[in-house]
Amino acid sequence: MCISQKQSDENGRTEVCHPGMEYYRQALIQGTAPAPAPDCLLALGLLRPSPDAPDTYAPVPPDVALFDRARPIERAILNQQHRLASMRVSVSRLETVYQEVQQRTAPVRQIVGESAISAALEKAVRSCRHELITMQPGGGRDPDLLAEALGRDLALCARGVRQRTIYQHAVRAHGPTLAYIERISEAGAQVRTVDEVIDRLIVCDRRIAFIPGHESRRTAALVIQDPGVTQYLLKNFEYVWERASPACDEGGRGDVHSPEVLTHATRRAVLELVVRGHTDEVIAARLGISTRAVSAHVKKAADMLGSRGRAQLGYLIARAGLLDDAPDTKSAA
Image 1: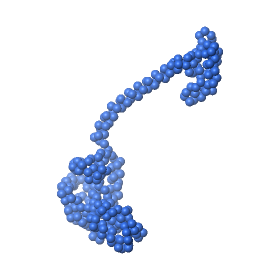
Image 2: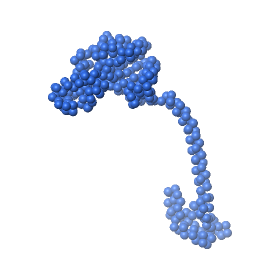
Image 3: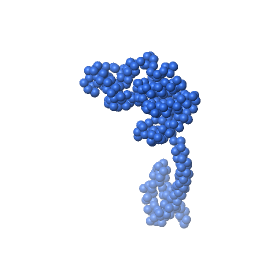
Image 4: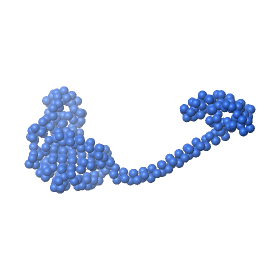
């Protein structure tokens, strides 16, 4: 037996060994060759038993041997190609169905345009049956929007829909927003405020969520119906909710904290963002307060610490430990 033939079985291919090459050469010269013949030549069909002389082999032309041995392999390959093509056709038909369904029930969709976003939000909120959760960043809201939201939210409360909303502390100084909060709190909604940066979030019945889109916070929104992502957003809400302070007392009256407590909380939030390197304009936008108010908090901290520049102020705030302990706003309720 040829050693290379044994190796060819293990490697999945057939090679002609050196003794086989010489045997085939002699068979071509003499017309036949005596047995035994190298296995590699027999495996490739390069030898056939001679009909005229027992125990001898006649050489077969390489192209004829290859054609004979390749036919079943090529036929098997062709059959597999036909099977593959058939599978692709079948799956392509199902792909069309899949895309049609995904377009209707995609776990994440983007809505562009304020009017389209408003319509989608209105539809989702009005369809709430059990719970509405929202986080509203920034300061006071537009009075026209508050008037529009008031009737809708009061109707939700009347239907027994549980409502929880988180604002930033800045809304406590905005009369129209505070009045709106008092009205919906009297109807059973719960509203809290925080001194930290939050992002917009609306979740209806824990099944559909709205967050800002990446193109523009005001002109693009993502509608999320993936259960895993929705649960992640809800966990973040619950974490912020536990850290927030009630905006109204049990009687529905707003501003349950003293101005000193709220001013301290706002100043701490401003200084946190100063340490992170944000400008007054960015801090004002994120906390929902005026740039003038931010500048006043920054100036007071700079005067107290003797800072000569913005970069030094951030360093001095961190070194002085002004941000080590959060103000106990809840205990002041």
